[in-house]
Amino acid sequence: MIEVPEAFARTTVEREGEVGAAWLAELPQIVDELLRRWGCGPDGEVMHGGVGIIVPVRRGDGAAAVVKVSFPHPGNVHEPDAFVAWGGRGAVLLHERDDDRFAMLLERVHTSTLAEVEDGEEVVTVAGLISRRLAVPAPPGLPRLRDQADAWEEQLRKDAGELAHALPGHVVDAAVATVRDLGRAQPDLLLHGDLHARNILRGEREPWLAVDPKGYAGDPAYDGGTLLKSRALTLLEADDLRRAVHRVLDIFAETADVDPARVRRWAQFHAVQAAFWGRRHGFRRARGGAGRDRLVEFVDHLAELLTEGAAVIR
Image 1 (cartoon, rainbow, N blue to C red):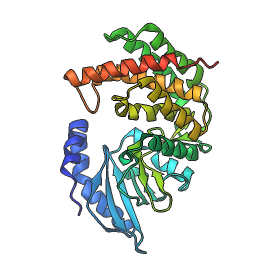
Image 2: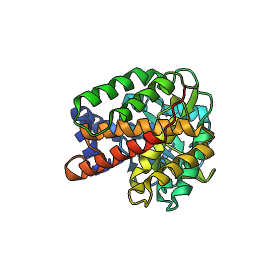
Image 3: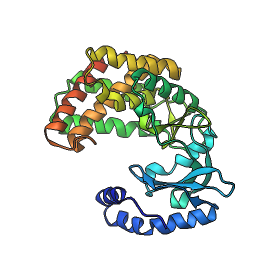
Image 4: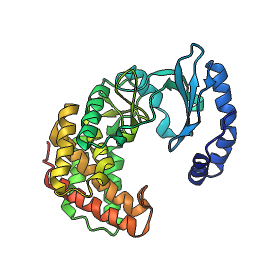
């Protein structure tokens, strides 16, 4: 049986408590059962992400693959549905699935990610091209981003009223306007939903392939905002932050073939969300203290800068 990585076990228990501990206790047996059913044998060390483990395997015909098993969570439900819809177009291939176990047998790719590429413009270009390839008609049954619009607006207003913050009123208003203008009427196109450079890996069949999708249906420009949020810290040292930010958004819009104005508005919305989230929960790189405060100040500045360039779309 496999050994669950210690770091993964620790963070799972910290996040999920007793339920997480119980799932971890069953996990080696779950993987063993899946390997037998899918005719696979272990072929390397167990890896992990934030909510799941990756077991390198060899299939019965000798082909390399991986078994991914995620902690049961609503956010992971539609990952295999997205892979089915893409059929390997810009994303890894799905070979088998067990939805009850939140498990999949997937095409194996390299462990190196797009985040390791030093050229920032190449990173954004590749991400935009991947986004464009993933934007296929969404099958029925997938969560629609438009259904989150009411909750987005409610949370923005709640955060603005409850939290001590330095965001000017027009910045928050611009994010709310994006929800009203763009959030409630979105195309039925399949999105990644968590598009960032660590979720794009080097492949053999194609140079780059996406992993870990959320499987949302909505506006592809939304993922441009997600990408910028993930790239924000790389822009901290930019000589001209405004120019650097808009360069990222322009490259993404061009390569993803989406409206630049929509990308800017979604990016501003994501920045305001992040500014409030950081105040409530901290950031992955700094949960509290002076580090968090510096990041909050930077995200505030980013949100204001994006508000200047976010034209209203009616």
